[in-house]
Amino acid sequence: MNNNRTFADFCKKRRGFVIVIILISLLSVAVLYRSNIHRDNMFIMDEHQVLGIKGDKANQGVTLSVVAKQDDITVEREVILKRSAGPGENEKTEKYKYSPEDELNTEITRLVRGMNQSEDDVLMLPNHIGDNVSLVWDRKETKYSWLLPIIFPPLLLLFMYRGERNEIKQEAKREVDSIVNELPSFNNKLVLLLGSGLVYEESIRRIAVSNDYKGKNILPVRLGEIIKDAECTNGDTTKLLNEFARKKKIPELKRMTTIIMDNQKKGTDLRSKLVLEGELLWDRRKKRAEEQGRASESKLTLPLGVMMIALLIVTAGPALMQM
Image 1 (cartoon, rainbow, N blue to C red):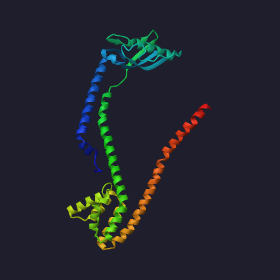
Image 2: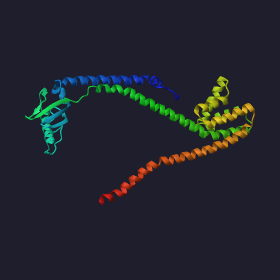
Image 3: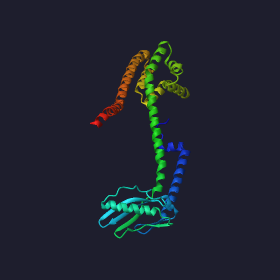
Image 4: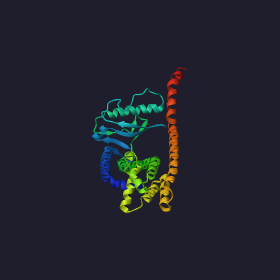
């Protein structure tokens, strides 16, 4: 996987999926816009407030805000007008309270219940209750709600892109960790093959096709790919392996390839140097295993703490409740 793919490349790769999402989004916008237009046509309005509701659409339920004023007392609340709803469907019956605000709320509740039972084609909204309570009705603003589906496609694609990027990074990290863990065994086998009289080029070819390294191990797979590239381009296998280690940022492999290139240039004893390098690789592998063990212990601290708190609540809770 290419770790440098841009968002544009991601969208091009999934062109069909992107087109389907955009079409669904545009269809949703059209449906919501048409619904808003129909809902706007339901209201009978003047410059400042809603005067009434017309058409059968009112049977689906309309949310309004109402402001009731009585002398110096003002109550504002939202109500749902749902025609033929029956008494008590929209509002819960509460015990009567004697504060002025509660009295106004009770009056509004009674008024809404009465209007819900109306069978008139055009429902006119009253502007007062009795002689001393004025009412101002207004609709709940949802002018631009139909634009919300437009935001969905880019957000969905962005989340998918970030998820793929994270997966690519995790896969690259797993590959590097696997190669680093395989290096000590790779070095030991290379030392054994060199000790048996094979030259370096033949040794790494034997390792690349060895049955012992098939399956979960990534290093021989990458080594085989590098050998094929070297044969096709007439290049140096060690230099290509060194370049691979530099790109993947694997200092252990880069140091090993540097030792091999020094041997090819200066004719130094490769096997003895690789033996020393192998000891260092095994020591580093043991240290990494110890660090991973300590990291696992620290990750378990929070779950164990939560379990301890839950255990204390279960065991000590009943006793504390009886005190």
